[in-house]
Amino acid sequence: MSKSEIEENRFYFDKLSEQLNELPTGKIVFDDKPDIVIRYQGNDLLGIELTNLYSDGNHNRKTGSKLKLDQTFLEQLGKDVIDNVKKYTDRCFHLDIDFKKVPNKKHLNKIIPTLTKVVLKHLSQMNEGECLKVSPSLFNQHDFDEYSLKFIQTIYILTSPQFKISKYIGLLNSQVKSLKTTHIQTVISEKDNKLREYKPCDSYWLVMIIGGSMSQFSEFDEEKYYSTLFDRVFIFNVMNHVLNELKTSI
Image 1: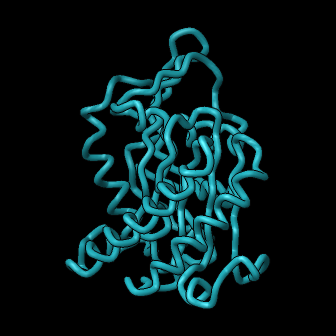
Image 2 (image 1 turned 45 degrees about the vertical axis):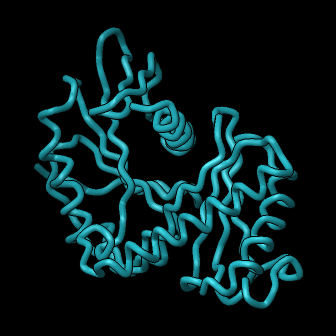
């Protein structure tokens, strides 16, 4: 596992710890298969696997090459914004942008400077370890030009003293408004199939990370039981600090 992956997993673990009081305390190791191992109460081992939960279309690649091209385009846009911001600050941060629709290339010469200005302004006011949600539809509209308002839904800025580099995480761009229970089960089952490859632990938890508002996912059923070999399974909305535990059965 690379240093940047460990850094990212450490950030998610810190946020998970804030939401889950029963998370055991002990020696923590960031590794792979599973991503996190906690040794507690002597020699008991808890393995935690982290995974990004993408939308049905993105996961199954049903939308074809157009989706891939859009995703690549938006990721490059985000990286360009970060490169601009880094010209004015040495502070490390993670950035995510939720777009209403994919902007046209001809609008980038206005959208990128606007995003750069907004990120710089809010980043300078943020404390370490903070997640900030900036919505042009709710406030600070004077910061957004007319083109940006057409395309940008929400900007998420994350800070942490553990961040050594700035990066565009792109969680929201690949998660659209349909998250069917069948898709959640598919992701869980794929992780189940790899569980035999994991380091031995006394119990295993699966944490699926999403972005945006849970209200977007109209087909998400909190009462449904999901079949899994994991002892506990969670859906974690990092940006909005919402942690949902799924009902599971073997």
